[in-house]
Length: 374
Ligand code: SF4
Image 1 (cartoon, rainbow, N blue to C red):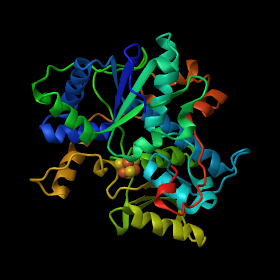
Image 2: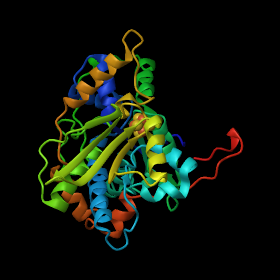
Image 3: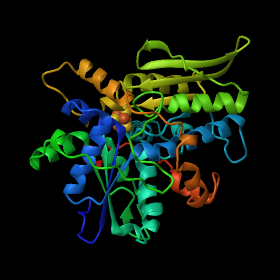
Image 4: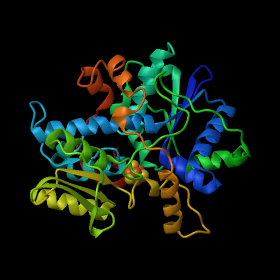
């Protein structure tokens, strides 16, 4: 990826998973971690630091709407259920390379939070700053290496301005090494306020979403679908473990009839099982939250390890820290409706389709390792 030039505005977008991992390493709370990280990035020349929890509001809302459209079988949206979550590039690469045209119509077209942030920064924010997208260098901080592959997809390259929505992806571990190289101890830094993308969005403290460390897709789509399709308010989502803790299901029932049947499938063992059931026509689910990493994004390959601590114990600590942050409902989050109205020109507009959705491509199997295409 191209190096930032001195004339470009530098923007960093930090994921909530990376923040929780750094908080565990430095024994800070997540809010202090976010503020001190902002302070660090500003010291090394970054102009704006954002939180990808904000872009995740849009990923969740678009996923919810897509599910309801598909469930109702509305015109122009005839793809089959189950709808499969799309935020994990490890899963997307596997689906494109291994199951191609069979599985791809099932995958939600909603962009991941990283790539929605790409649209927000290179389109909305660029307009606000009176800059063309190529005059912004956008870096994200993510829990896994696969996010680098996602950012480099041709679908996220702006031909007109010859620039990517996300120019560079740093893993949590790479940010930790950057701190070490700069000789900075995060706890010693003065906190700095977080930046907000638009006037209506509050950035006083970092926020997150209900439903687990991978973004809460299952819970948000489930609650929304229960309300929208059946008029049922779901106070608590109850998970039923199946083969293991990484394969669980959730049902909505009324008078003994199953109205909604959702599942989460984390890790390739469970994903392969899910795909086999789909291929045999024996997949009972309407929606599946699919994530490539066992235990999900808080356990991503780019997260920090602790050699002196069992990985299970560390993960539980990171999960606790992740859950300490205030959760927001995406539909009520400040700034979101304002952006749908003024930036995207409505929820079902051409603009929302172009900037918040993507497409997938079946990849022919490469005959040698050198021929791998992402
Ligand atoms: S599940 Fe793993 S590979 Fe997928 S987005 Fe999360 S951290 Fe990355």
